[in-house]
Image 1 (cartoon, rainbow, N blue to C red):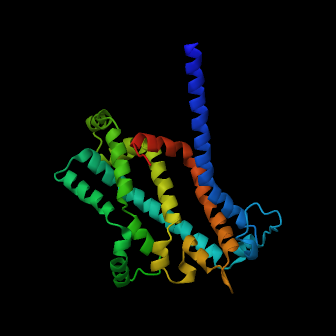
Image 2 (cartoon, rainbow, N blue to C red; image 1 turned 45 degrees about the vertical axis):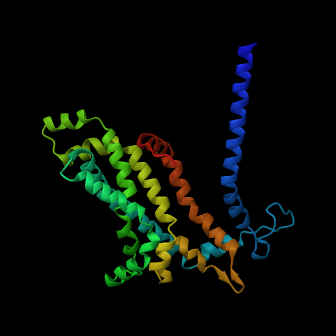
Image 3 (tube, rainbow, N blue to C red; image 1 turned 120 degrees about the vertical axis):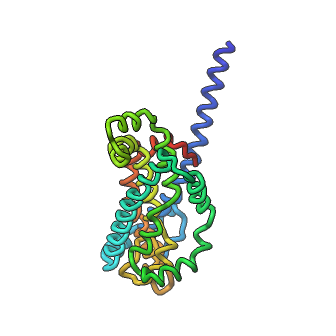
Length: 279
């Protein structure tokens, strides 16, 4: 009798936990559902109830977005910027992470601690100095005003360093006995074994740069050079912002992120588990 009661309590707890997780998931998904539903409405019914049966739905908003002459430019600018940034970030981060994880050079802990300390400085506090700095370097209104600051993000250096430290030293020691140098050890052993962490870095980087609003908004002024997220503000009408059209553009802008997550989900979960990141 006691065993049956224990099994029943365990099942009840499991059902309760599942119900709570379902409600939390619904709360997180609901804003995205609202975004998609409102993107099919006209501007006059944007703020009406989500379940109002009298609202007429239309594809006009998506036609307005896709036929806008600047939209392909914004999409192309964002894809190029994200691609170049991620490629350069990996080129810089992977060797640096290997150096901190394996070389143990003099002062490595101090240097690493100083780099980590920079994460405590909010980016908002450096807006004015960065603007003046980019202005002096003639980087304003170019792709490089986004790419160059994003190349050496410390979070991803920490992620890759932690993963490299978890790789058994026997692998690198065996390679050294065979005459392999550090570059060969990095490219032939560490990088092939780091697929999950690299996929996590690529996915996080893609999402963060793709959704970056503040930096492009401040440092890119020409409409032709703008990126997709801040550029959605240009969908205006006489009474102000055309919310359904902006949400239609946001929905289209989410497509690459969803596709990338679908292809990297397995590696992303493995990377988060192996690196010890919790959020």
